Image 1 (spheres, helix red, strand yellow):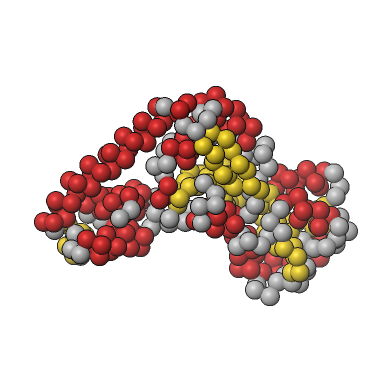
Image 2 (cartoon, one colour):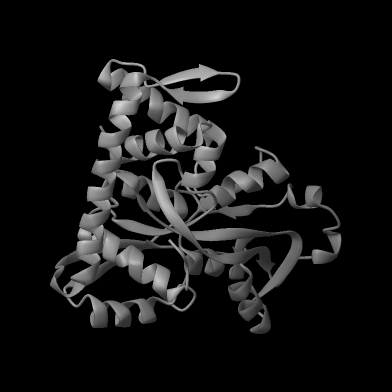
Length: 289
């Protein structure tokens, strides 16, 4: 039995509706439904009566609701105790990042941790969104920054909206790019490691996009573009700087905004080191949890 199963159960019991419960927990109705089904199977008893009007508790569901609320309240007390004694927390937080240290305010985060949680150190890995998600699930990372939606088995906070653009070699003839389709015949340098930007490119330009190179490192990808080996997506801020230095050109045809999230696994939310870092991230970016 997982804590997030109990949270879903309590949310549905209080709202009587999968959609409202999903909104409360920032997830989707199918995820909430799956949590309830898993809990019912584990307990070998139906917890809700389902009807066109919504979901109401069975008698056994009513009994479990009391116990579930006590369990969740105890978990909150544990987290609060850890938060109130952060100077006593000792451990290493393995962090995945996908932007520059400046963009994610890494130096400020380190300073805040040194002041508020001196026993916590950071082990930082620069990598793509897909690899960060994979390694959090495998407990190789404790948390990280990702682009795109938050997976159902994660919780997180939205940090910033980031604009993404296309960069091309300085010798590239941009006058011939009039539509998105005009980009589909040119060589691309992809991100790899299950990056959502690769999926977006295929949606916009087709699955047969020419690509012989893949790298999740922005610096390497930018260097390959500068060398004339292809086009690639890049954060707009970095792209503008490179264009000012006359090393690449910006093609705005595919420009889009994406949300940068900081995420951790739901199953590890009550671990003191992880909770303390999540708290510092929220304070740093003036976010509500």
